Structure formats: C-alpha cells, structure tokens
Length: 328
Length: 295
Image 1 (cartoon, rainbow over the protein chains, first blue to last red):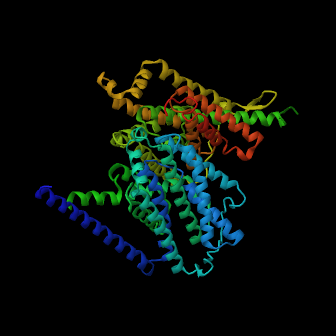
Image 2 (cartoon, helix red, strand yellow):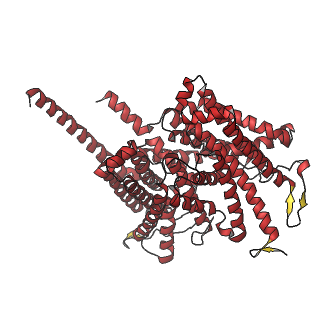
C-alpha cells in the first residue's frame, strides 16, 4: 500500500468506528429512556406502544427487508391473543407459558398462510394475505372459544414464572419491555445476518437471486413465518397487558393500521416501526379524547395519503436522508 | 314438497338466485378491478368504497333531488366515475412512476377517508332504497317465486359485463386499451394520448363499481360499510380467476356467487368462507389462477 492509500484506509476505518460508536451511544440513550419512561408517562399507554411497535417491527421485517406487503398480519396478532387468553383463563397457566403457546399458534398459522401466499408475488401476495386473514376473522367470529363478537374478558395477568405479580403496572411494563427488546434483537440479528442479506437481494431482484442459486421461496417462507411468530408474540403480550382479546385485532382494519405505522415511521428502517407505532397510537389516543373522536379513521386515511404522496421514506427514513446529506 | 338433495326446492332455487345476484356483483367489481389493473398496474383498494358511493349517490339523488332510479342508474356512475377521474389525475398519476405497491396504499387510505366521512354523515346503520315501481312484485315460476327486481339485476349486470367484454375485445377503443396494457410506451410513440387513456380507464372502472352500487341499493341497505367486506371477497375472486382475462373475471365472479349460494343451502356455517377455501385450492393446484397467464 502506498502511504496515501494507508492514510485513506485509516480514515475510513476511523469514520466507521465513529459511526459505530455513535450508534451504540444512541442505543444506550434509547434504552435509558425506555427504562425511566414509566415514571414519566402512564405505563399502560407505554405498554400499548411497545406491543404495537413489536407488531410493526415484525411486519417491517417482511415489507422492508423481503419486499412482501402482507395485508393479513392482523390474523397473527389476533391468533396470539386468543390462544394466550384461552390457555390462561381455561388452564390457568402462568403468563409466560400462555404467551409461548399463543406465539406458537401464530407460528403455525403463519406457516400455513406463508406456504399459500408466497406462491404469488406483488399485488397478488397482498390480496391473498388479506383474503386468508378475512377467513381467519370469520373463523374467530364463529368459533365458540373466542366469545364471538363479545371477545374474551377478564383474563388474569397472573404471576410471571409464578413469582412476580404482573397486576402491578410497573412490573408488567418491564416485562413487556423485555419482550419487546427480545423481539427487536431477533429482528436486528436477522437483518444483519447473511440470511437478511439474501432477503434484501430477493427484494431488489428476485430473478437474479434465483439465478445465483438461492431457493427464494424458502427464504421468503422463513421470513414470513418469523414475522408471523413475532406478530403473534406482540398479540399474546398485548392480551396479557389488557386482559382481553377481541375481534378488533383480527379485523382487516388492524392489518391496515400496522401498514400505516410502518409507513409513517419508515419502511425498511430498524427504528421506523417503533416511531410509527408511537405516532399512530398517540394520535389515536389524543383523537379519541378530543372532539374529533369520530374522525379517527378519516384522519388515519389522510395520513396514509399524505405519506404516500410526499413522505414515502417515513419519519426515520427522512431523518436518515437528512443526516446523510448534511453530516457525512 | 319437491326436494333437491334433501333441501326444499324453493329454498334451493331461492339461494341459487341470491348466489347468481352476488355473482353478478362479484363479476362487475372484479371486471372493474381487472380493467384498472391492466393499464395502471395497481389494485384499486377504494373499489369497495366507490361501490358504496354509487349506492349513496343513487340514494341522495332520490332523497335530495327526487331523481328516480332509472336516471340514477346512469347519473350515479357518471358522478362517481368523475370523482375517479379526479383521483387518477391529481393523486394516482403523481405516483405512477414508483413501485405500484404505493398505489395500493394510497387507494387504501382513500377508502378509509371515504368510508369514515360517510359513517360520520349517515351513521353505521343502513338506509332503505325502495325498489323502482316498474320492478315491484314478482312472478311464480311454479318451482319458486321470482322477484322482478332480482331478475332485472342479474340480466342487466350480465348485459353490462358482456358489453364491456365486447368493447374491450372487439372494438378499436378496446384495442387501444389492450395495446396500452401490453406496451404503453410504444403506443404513446404511435401518437395515442396514453395519460388520457389511463385517466379515463380508471374513471370507467370506478363507474362500473358505482353502477354495481346502484343495482345493489334496493337489495341491500345503503350503508357506509357495504363495500369493505365485499371487496375482500372480490379480491379472492380475482386471485381465483387471475386478472389476465376479462371473460375469466366475469365467469369466475358468477361461478363463485353460485358456489357461495349453494353453500348457504347445504352448509351455512361455511358460506362466509367457501370462496376463500376455493382460493386456497386454486393456489395449491394452479397458482397463477384459473385464467391467469402471469406468475
């Protein structure tokens, strides 16, 4: 290497290290905020944000990194919720066992829906997932164990591992935070793994990925199942927090909401879904308490349209673009 | 009483007719979706809302301006189609050059807005729209009672479907449309105003949805949510048929309506889901759809 090249290499290495350090400082600061948040804001509200954030992160794994727009993710959220609620109230299992069973149920459903829907691409994929989720909705509407239109109520939060009383909002919050962090780390690791790189390749050019010898269907299926499992985990946790499971979670409207959260926050960014979920949940919460309460859907629709027309990168995506062009 | 496979004949034919009517609606709506998809490459998520707009337009024309059913049958699709033209010109065109997934998301947002506004204005519960006088009553066919209005819906919906098929497959304008589906850039080079064609195509697809809405108004109640669940079933129909063929969309729509009607007779619990089940079987054994060419 010539001296000039060495200097250049060292500089690149230095800026890479600096970026890395900045990233860890950011992570640490966020974690700190999450840890003290329940002392500053209402914990139940924060838990709602975390559950939906995990849901949106799971959805983003599929849309942002595999390029698959699912319009049926409500089915996994609801499945996780219903099965968790059922085993907790019928078999009085501890919450963590209930959540595991709910997540498992969503994973099974995800495998089934994934096998069917990855047989078509693009717009057809969206329509198939939507139709399959509608079928799941009708199943829960008619099944006995879900309580039909009434849903399940009064599910006991219980004691975590039989030890920690979750009826205390603060302990419940830290448990939900732990679940969220677990899901978030799984997604973070997946995205940065060789597996995640292949997913991105499929998103960019599926035909080329196939010609390079990758079994793209298998990759898409694994991504779909993983996404479904994490969405189910979010639904299961949400059921424990709110002590109820209802048809609202299974409705196509919920599938649309998670699309909106991801879009607002930034498709294909790690933190986008978290920001988007916080934004949408807060907007809904504020609106429901104001005179505009009946206009929630209209306003969500407007946000959808405005996002698509002018703000496609989402909040986090736009910030990243801004940072890239101003602070290299 | 005559029985057909253990079911009273009257109930059997009654459900068959209802299935045929639903099938006619599926056919009209999936036809509109297929036409829009052909040229714009987007799935129009607002299709259900626009179907609802058609029904409401007819209802408002009657109750505000005293305009009767027959005029509304032309006027309502025209009005709603015009709003579709505006949507294409001012919203969809701006995102025509990017990933078509965004078109889907935009129309989904539109559907939320339209449905939300109408829910706030008119409430969730439906409004009745009276059957036009000329079509009240019915006749006894011996094996069943046939209400005139329902017979009219089936006949006119089929006539419109085949009219549209004829226009697309056999006329010069239809030729432009098919050429535009194949290769818009080349067609533009031949001096055809493709952007105008795209705008009018979207407007026409929307007008078809609104036409179905007017037809549906006297049968179902005119409610803001009437299109949303219907649209999801139509999506399943589109997946089953594949959007490659106009005739395929029509025939699949009719067939699915009839299958749904028969399920209501023999196993009512599954009547909500039978079309989705058919979709699953089609995906397993013929993933590109019954009439589809694309993967």
